[in-house]
Amino acid sequence: MRAFIISTIMLIISGSAHAFDVEDRKVFKGHDGEPVLRIISTADISYFAPMINSFRATRPDVTIDYTVASSTQVMQAIYEEKQPFDLAISSAMDLQIKLANDGYARKHTSYSAQDLPNWAVWNDMVFAFTQEPAGFVISNKLFEGYAIPKNRQELINTLRQNPKKFEGRVGTYDIRKSGAGYLFATQDARASDTYWRLTEVMGTLDPRLYCCASDMIADVVDGTLAIAYNVLASYAEQSPYIDAFTIVLPSDFSTVMLRTMLIPSTSKNPELATSFLNFALSQTHPTETSTMLQTKSLRQAKQSTLTRISLGPGLLVYLDYFKKKHFMEEWENAILQE
Image: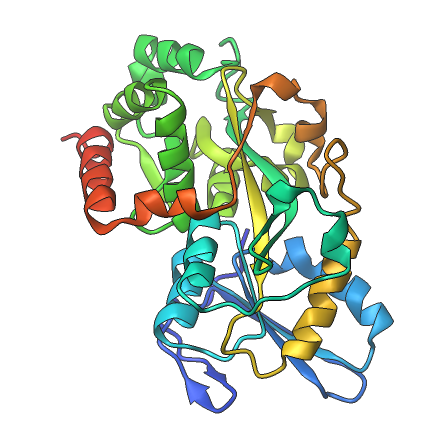
């Protein structure tokens, strides 16, 4: 679970105070303390530390200042506050595309990116380095005696038939706060009307809404939740309590997110950012068939059920003010039933 810092904390970076909400921060100090690479990311420190440590093994002189924030706060830090981060890493592909499309990312022709499939790079600015599916995380204890749902329709049926059992024990993203949650919701809605039927059913059960996948997983582990919907399998697979739950990639369709990085136009150290970007991409060794840092569940999934979100300007559709407003209102009416 993320080690949260009070969200209103004001951190000083490069001598400039900022107002975006920080969830966590760690400085990986180099031998000399300089140069400093400043990264803002949606990925938990524990999730991304192996990549940082691998890079530091090749560049022990570099200090890496790693800040964790939600995807909407990453967007605010770069787009609104123009903070001088050298790399922005996010699970919200649409917000990353918007940053690049609106002139907030540097173009970079990476030798490592030459081996990337076309779907993993957009306009030499946004680079995917993982594929991570979203699915169900189901409590083994609270589902004892019940069949594990394998798709959304089976989940709908289970929840409808057992409202007392699951009231207050269903969790999902609060898409008003989570950029990744909003991305998953819009992509699910585009893929099938089943999403809205499921959302309405969850809305009758007093669902719990979350900012972060790690919090949902923690609540499944401790018995607060029986099921968490649209959780990234990559986080669930890293839990030390994985024996407490079952990860299901729904057989009707499994939405696959690409985690991406870009070099903000505000970077004060773009050369070092380029070095890290090249290193990260070189670790993935992706091809069209063998994917980039796949999760175990993704490797085992039936490929025909996987729906990879396309990296490109099509993601901007649901960021349109009126379309987003309408989607949010429809979601609130479904999920926040009195």
